[in-house]
Each structure stands twice: as structure tokens, then as C-alpha cells.
Length: 194
Image (cartoon, rainbow, N blue to C red; front, side):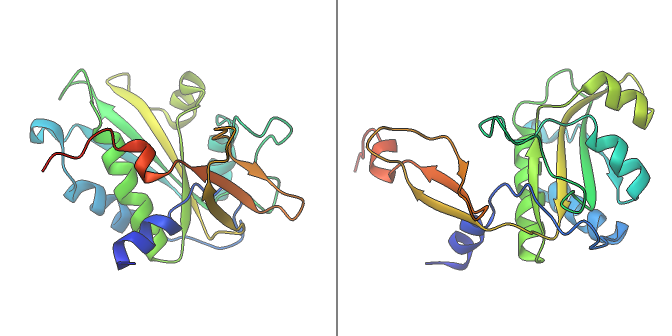
């Protein structure tokens, strides 16, 4: 296994963290720098970022997020398990009206960088955007695209093959291990042309 493959395997959505593990602003800036260096459609670079590592504002951001839709009886991290930091990815509508997949590319770069530095994160798209915009006093020219929760991981995430029933829903076992079914590579490739 290559180092990159190992890093990608480790880079799972993490939803429980050591909340008391402090993350410095310089760490968040270094992660955003990875996003800055990443590809951007037409090289427009329309993404902007809000960084938060303060407990008071983190709590307010947390109130705007929905966690793990497949886990119906789990409503997100409890006190002590919440993220230590957030990166809010914004699209600047004065640069572009659409953002394509730029924020996905940026988020993946941020999360890979976090994982390489012993941290983990979760890309969250289920956001109460209007409420968060008010909390963060985000100008109307910016569209909230994603929120990335960052912290020191407190949970074990295991990849496994999708079962014969085809169910791809992630789940927790009694030991709080997070299981993530992944489709077989041969099921994804429609054709190999040589």
C-alpha cells in the first residue's frame, strides 16, 4: 500500500473528538493553505474561509450543524466529544456565481492535511445556513458551501466491504466503532479500455 493510499484510508469522516485538545489558528491556516494550493475551476479561486478555534463561537457553529443522517438515534457529538475547531468554506459570488466542485477539492485537501497531522475531520453540508450566516456576520456576497469540523479523533472508523444486500449505510457497533461499507473496486469500473 502506498503512503497516499494509507492516508486516504485513514481519512474517514470523524464525528467524535477530544474536545479539550486545543487547535491553534496557525494549524487551521496551514490546512487552508493546502486548499489554496489545490485545483480550482478556470483558476478563479472563488473560495474564502472562516476559521474558528474558540470554544464560545464553536458552540454557536455546532448549533447550526446536523450530524450523521444514517445514525437515526444519534444527534451528534456530546459535550466532551465535540470538535475543537471549524473551517467554514464560503463561495465569493463577486468572483463566481457557481463553485462547481472547488469546495469538495478544497475540503479533501484540508482533511488529508488534518489526518497527516494526527487530526481528523468531518465535511458537513447539512447546515442551517441563514442562522450560521447571522452568527458569523457573513456578508451577503458569500455563500456558505461547507463546514469542516476538525479535532483530535476519539473514534475508531473501520472500512469494510458492502454486504450482499448492497447496504452502504454507515453504522456504530456496541463498542462505538464506526463502520463504513465501501463498494468493491470492480463494481465501480464499467469498462477497461486498453
